[in-house]
Amino acid sequence: MSKSFESYQKRKLISSYFSVVLSIGLVLFLLGILGLLVLNTKKMADHFKEQITISLFLKDSAKEVEIDQLQKSLAMAEYTKAATYVSKEEAAEQHSKEIGENFIEFLGYNPLKNSIDVQLKADFVSLEKIEEIAAELSKKNYVDEVSYDKPLVGLLSENVKKISFWILIASAIFTFIAVLLINSSIRLSIYSKRFIIKTMQMVGATKTFIRRPFIWTNIKLGMLGSLLALLALAGVLYYINGSFPELNLFKDTSMLIILFVAVFVLGVLISFISTFFATQRFLNLRTDELYY
Image (cartoon, rainbow, N blue to C red):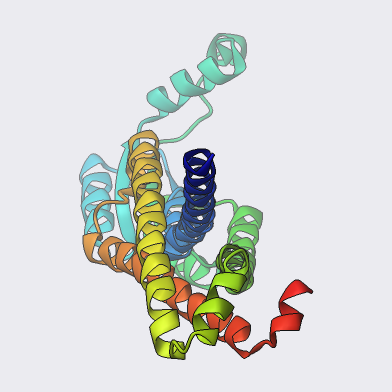
């Protein structure tokens, strides 16, 4: 009978520890994902900004040497990520594929112009800077027109600011929720041992002596939960980097190391603080208050 009871108590204890580790790991994993999102907000915004292209349509009278010089000067410009020359023949072929028919046969001539597509660096993707660049390029006498999607640029800049703001707000709120959830899990774990705490106190054990094993146990559980979260976070990070290699998530390894260390330390720190105050609460209760 006693062996059966001991076995039951052991299973109950393991189940309690497992639930604490799992809850800590899950909360820290979600917090790590959010931290990853915060760290890469600018990188993702830059990726979308750098899809913006300015098209320089050239006059038919433009000489080959002028086009070549213009392309080289654009490639070396501080605002350029890439400059690609597109001949009118290439443009016609691409347009025919898009519409599904050969429009040149219908019209009898190619109305398109030679062009240079300039892919901008993220820091220069704003309405003011693009307008300055477009105005400067329009001054060249062999440039017929400078075109870009003005509404898209304005919408992108506005949405990037909004998304960055709300991600920061969400991070603050979720961090607070994470602390509350981990704290609740640890408090429930210690609540089940409140009579043991009071018994130890009644036989003369000091508060420090009573707290020490609880704190050390929950710090170890916090470490396990943190490691579980970091393993899951590393798996997600590897998957995202494989699916979207253009984000180059592993480039800034120092920031990733800081994030992983922060998640681990946060798990240990919250476990320590929550255990300290939870045990302190039950140590300060009267015996008859333990039943409520």
